[in-house]
Image 1 (cartoon, one colour):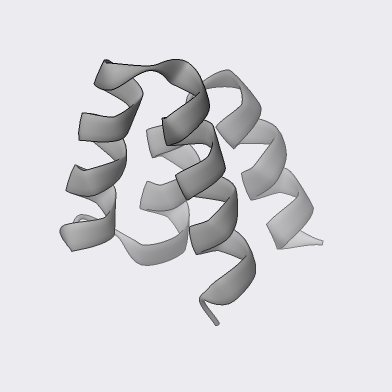
Image 2: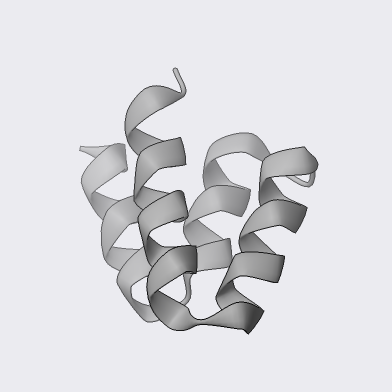
Length: 54
């Protein structure tokens, strides 16, 4: 259920979902960079992080 909430938050602001999943770490900073380069790369990365991380 929490993954669904994280994915919904990622649809609005992708780094928020990554932050809630892994905290401030490498994936968070990569996601911020990807989101700044374009919304969709950040969104895809956020969903990938949320689905693959335990």
